Image (cartoon, rainbow, N blue to C red; front, side, top):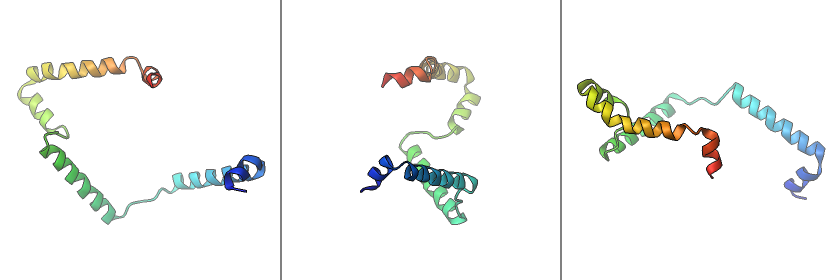
Length: 103
């Protein structure tokens, strides 16, 4: 008998498996795994490289350019960014229930 068959026919086994998974989940939440210093440095290096690649490809990442544009040309930046804000607002207005029912 396979594990799936045993779980589907044996209530005690199913309850025991459920309790075991629940305990493991609680234990993970209490003491989540932590990254070491070297892992953090490696992750940061990968992130920095990805941001550099995106910026080099013409996809600005972050707020530096936007903040500079707002400081130098606030009125024109307002008009340039308004369509994006309006489209984002129109897309968000129907709410999650609408977007979830589309698919």
